[in-house]
Length: 420
Image 1 (cartoon, rainbow, N blue to C red):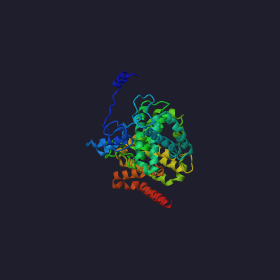
Image 2 (cartoon, rainbow, N blue to C red):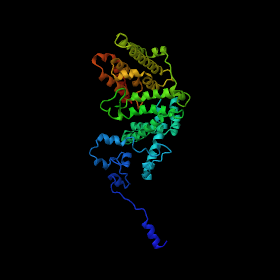
Image 3 (tube, helix red, strand yellow):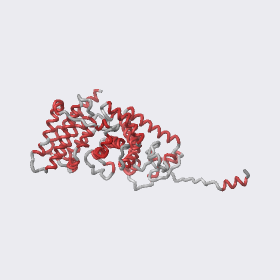
Image 4 (tube, rainbow, N blue to C red):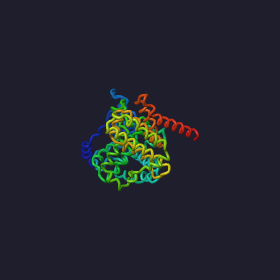
């Protein structure tokens, strides 16, 4: 090539545009910054402080926290939203080492799910096998479920390794937000192919909501202090979503891989009375609250309260029977009552009708039975504290039994921890 040719080629070379406007963190790491504000993509992904925030005085600390886990954050590396998505992945601009680290993190989560987390989702070996083997296979065909698995597992590891809590909760939020967005798209078009994945996601997201709240999430009541944020979705609303899904796709799922989780169990009344006569008697006595005051309730309200109480009595009987009937999964029973109870009952709860609150307080006895599951810890206490704060003094005698049961259980657990 002649000197003239070289000069001509050089003159047509695309100019290199170098920006000096990146954040300080990217500059120190010698990495190209995408200059997105108020958080650049790299700082948002790795939960780093970003110097751009200091230039935005109107951004509150709460906004900074929510921005780091918002649904607009780039999805974790290795789990794109769709195979046909032509949108450039911001992670492609990251160094190779960073991408490998992210992929290793996902592999760690998936391995921990199959070896540990999946076994905490049921007390029955045959159902544990479904969570351990069948669910990952469903997730590989439905990425929103895979994101849910990784998010839930990240919280489990954080529970066991609190020194890693900050990073793992951030990783869980990123997976959860991406999975939730994809799940909403799937729910708009339920098919025989995705219904099992949607059902499994709905079950996991309810457990995720409580586990990620540090035992301060909403259960059956909206928290006025946080109701302006999306994080205040009640646990019951997420569980009731399972009920909606079952109505839409229940027939498809009865022959699918999750059919064992849907198989109804019938309580043996005689067995339940033998195993837990006190509970059956105390629950039956609650009906005096509305049956002994004619005219206070219309026929629909009385039917609602009677149905909710009847289902709760059956759930207590099934939990008691689980001691001798190994086919009963206690977690499914505890999840089942709020899914099956009539919607009108929860309307009465939101209206803070005392009779409905008393019935709900006795549901805390079931929650207490599964408090040893890491993602259910503290739910019973939280529910009772909330109900107790909403009832006046005259109603305290009606929830004395659940309160006493909670105190005795916590005292017993505390003694076991000391002895161990």
